[in-house]
Length: 309
Image (cartoon, rainbow, N blue to C red; front, side, top):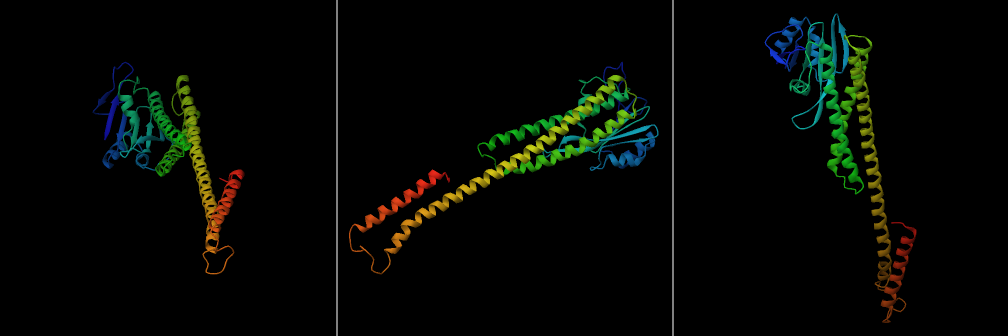
């Protein structure tokens, strides 16, 4: 699907065109092979770049071909199953148009077309920076949701209420965070190159936006690393707690075994079919029980005194 959006500085709203003209924002979402060939021919774009934009594993980078610039980034989106994932996005710009190509729906398009954001497609630099800003905000939102989920699980650690499902969620969260990290780091490198190389005509305000994007991405990267460290710490703490609880249980079972073996030994001796001292007296049973109780009490006293359990 290919759409042509246009809005001038004096225009009231973004309009969708049927054809291409100077100052147009061309957005291609899940384009077919025929549409890719059409774009490549009309914009004089190398088809390989458009095909790279549809590769799910394409990594962020920046390339220059003549007067055309190619910015590859990855944006976060929620899948039909409710999981977070990232997808590639190509932003191609030249002296006349801006082209975006993605294999999935780009949430930033809805935000820009909602009418709440003022922009003009004729201002290429501001349009590109707006798209990148919306992508950065989506990362921030996703990372904040993940942080709250990790804090919720961590709070249950105090009550030892973590379940196996939490660790399954941890595995999913780690995959998502690692995906975000591998997307944001090269994106920052591309932004620095874009800023340093003056590939786009930027005013001082535009340069400030790029620098803010760089700073925001760095903060997101640090937040991701912090969340990954938190997950590792929770895992280690839970492992230590589980090991300690297991040791306590084994210690208690060992003590119970020792305590219970004392009367068992005495009763076993007097159950033998051989002559034993005082075996015909009536008080020997009570004496044996009393001695066993004293021994058992002594063992329990020592255990409590030494704080074994």
